Image 1 (cartoon, helix red, strand yellow):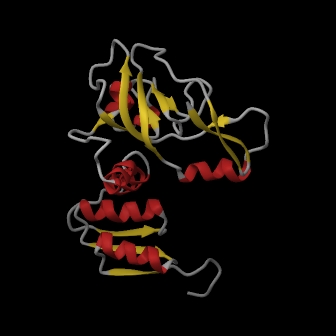
Image 2 (spheres, rainbow, N blue to C red):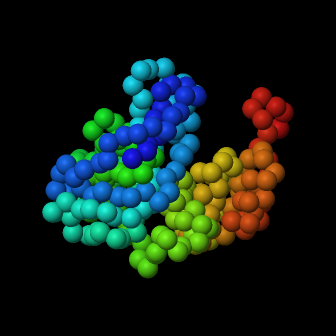
Length: 231
């Protein structure tokens, strides 16, 4: 199969890699339909020291289950699934408290043991806790617009939603979102969906602020002054 490797700052290559296999009975193999380029990928892209061995990139995908380990119960072959940016059992004490990224048995993609997900196929550990099934989706017939929307549920929207959730946004809340990047705009959308009455988006890009108005319907939306500039 083909997969994406980072060899150093600015040096990304698509190369052949071994097809993944079931290593643990809780694993699933997923055929990747779309994978994200996450904002966190930009940090190593700009700063990773050059090396002879490339690092497999990617930690979010949507795809189709091709194979499951014998202990997997919640997904099966043919299911269309979303894989967020970490894997977890979703049963440990931290997962039950909603802190899945602190899962006692989970971890992160992009390591030698669990390679990155920007590839044709991927091994997903702890599949019952790490994959979310999307019912009634035929990947061969679904519109591209829906695929793009579903892909955001593996990555950036989750971050924005977590911010709104952690900020205790409820019906009637007044919310300020600092930053008009992808995460900030996702927080605007999430705050609106959680019932915020007034959303103030602080940013400096007219096109993004316009999108924030459309997504959040805020009554106040303005530009933040550059650091060091007079108020």
